[in-house]
Amino acid sequence: MPRTKETSGPSSARRGKRPNDRMRPRKYTRINSEEVDYKDLNLLRRFLSDKGKTRGRRVTGLSRKHQRQLAVSVKRAREIALLPYVGER
Image (cartoon, rainbow, N blue to C red; front, side, top):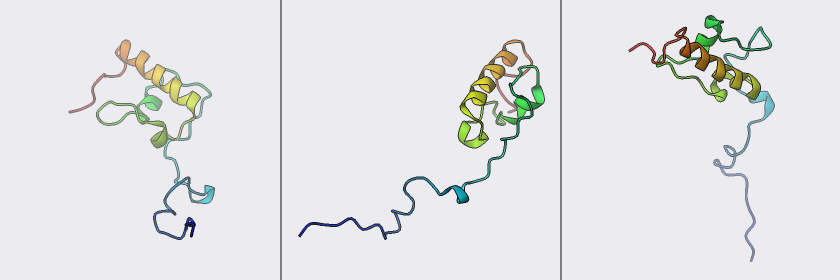
């Protein structure tokens, strides 16, 4: 007798993607400009953690393009000492 796969178990509901109507709201998706600039420190600080690390795309909700621009802008701002490399201790 062949086994059939049952999907009524509690663990099967957690696998896969969530439906679109139940997606978690993103905190930081609002960027007013088309490009992320390294001189806009208020915008850059929104995407940094307390320790000074850049938050991931899952947390920020940014697109791949904007997340990459953010990473480059943070690196440039740190290089010319507009942002610290390490956050507050």
